[in-house]
Length: 168
Image 1 (cartoon, rainbow, N blue to C red):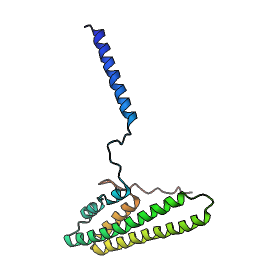
Image 2: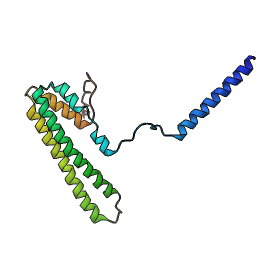
Image 3: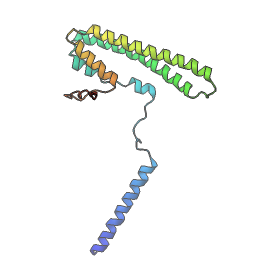
Image 4: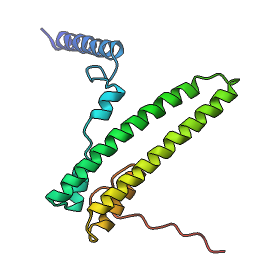
């Protein structure tokens, strides 16, 4: 076999591999094999916030027991409110534009559930503050701020400097 024949065989093999790869990518989604979780399953998944809080706050055993009890009560209440909010939102968005009375009533219900969520979060944060020692309170407030903003800063990250208004 000469070099041209060997190269021809290699090109043909690569072409077949590329075609198989393209077929595989077009016949199934990129998430194939990964389980699609239902809303209930997602809500049941453990979150790491409690572990992070425990590590950052340096809770003792008694504090940790009180924290876990408060966290579980909060989780159950929030799960109920989140389910209500999803159901109301879905109903709201599927209404016709002419159903203004129904939309107004649904918005009132959505606002009430949102208020319940805010009040439940505030009570939970108050419960956490009651667990903390005075030295732990600033750490807790920083942690709550990070939860509210939706992300945790990288370890050792410094806050960006505040932007100053240009002086006129």
